Amino acid sequence: MNDMKDSNDINSDEDEQEYQRRIDSIKPHYSTEEELLQFNIEDVTKFIANLEKSNVELASAYIEDPDPVYYEAMTENVAIIEKKKNQLIELQNLLLEKQGLFIYNIVTYNRNKQKMSKKLLYLGQNEAIKMDVLLMGKEYGFSVDQLMELAGLSVASSIYKVYNPSTLSKKVLTICGPGNNGGDGLVAARHLVHFGYKVDILYPKRTDKDLYKNLTLQCEHVGCELIGSLPTLEEIINTYSLVVDSIFGYSFKGDIRAPFDSIINTLSMLPSDLVPIASVDIPSGWDVEQGNIRNTFTPGLLISLATPKKCAENYKGFHYLGGRFLPKSFLEEMNIEIPKYPGSEQCVDISFQEHEDPTL
Ligand SMILES: NC(=O)C1=CN([C@@H]2O[C@H](COP(=O)(O)OP(=O)(O)OC[C@H]3O[C@@H](n4cnc5c(N)ncnc54)[C@H](O)[C@@H]3O)[C@@H](O)[C@H]2O)[C@H](O)CC1
Ligand SMILES: [K+]
Image (cartoon, rainbow, N blue to C red; front, top):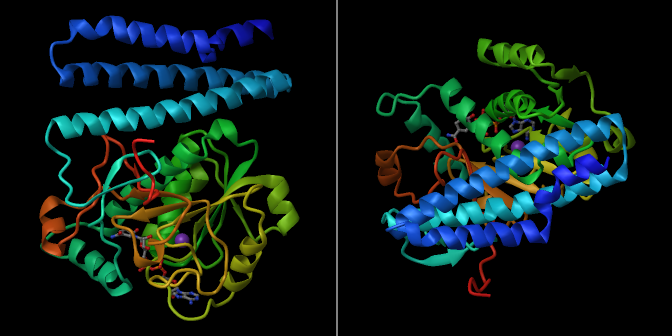
């Protein structure tokens, strides 16, 4: 046990100070600010990777011997990883700024004190549908399965950032609806398994199209279990650490019909501190433009796809943007401005704290 604790000493304050001393001592060798930023980005990335590796080791040690010390060490690691990831995003944005790629007119700040554009557009329902038609038309030439794959990957990537598998002790339940939002959920479920989660899927109203049949098959092949009906509230709490809501997206209209009415009712009774919900594109049951008018659940994480929709304008939880597939020409044609994705990331944190003073 002591050996494991020692290998985790990277967490300690002394190590952090040592790390800072090392960075400071190296600074003079870098001739430009851009080079220094590049170096810092690489260093923080390695630091995060080491901690994540250490957490995987701690997690397997904990499974063999559920000593709370392992758990505490993992929790400490997770907090440091979160801090370092925020630092990484700031460094990446600084680099973008240095390279002249951050061009925003009106500036506000998100929870990571990143500069964000006020011009970021919240689409209405018809605009979102129009956008889809345009993307998949002759001019832009995308196919639905291409976009769905990128959308689903970005959902899984966002979940990984907010609800890291090392912090979850139970499985993830992905609930899929009958349309493309459900398809995004199937893709996300498969990637979540690749990222280290155990995933069950509830897919009560399946479509006969090959795309959905294949996505379901692929999920089964990576080990997702397809469950027949929604477990009781108590069973959900005992079995799952997270619910992924991919029931309805931007085409949802009217009163919620069966079987999704009772599913959404149950989800609305779920204590969010015990089992948070991650919603794909739209929190299911919310009006696409007016938001939570039916007083259903509020997700802990919302992953808006391509651009956020109007219902998310006053959303206060973790908010990520994914679906990194919009070409510049398309953004110009639609007169949309979206935040820059850092590096090769599939998602970007757009959780707003509009009135926060970034210098505090
Ligand atoms: N360009 C993009 O950003 C992409 C987004 N994607 C995802 O696709 C959904 C929109 O998909 P769509 O198939 O148009 O619709 P939904 O999934 O929202 O749902 C349609 C489905 O739901 C049924 N339905 C509608 N209203 C109700 C109701 N009141 N009660 C019960 N059932 C209802 C309807 O009959 C249909 O069967 C978008 O949000 C993104 O998640 C793409 O994956 C990639 C491109
Ligand atoms: K949804």
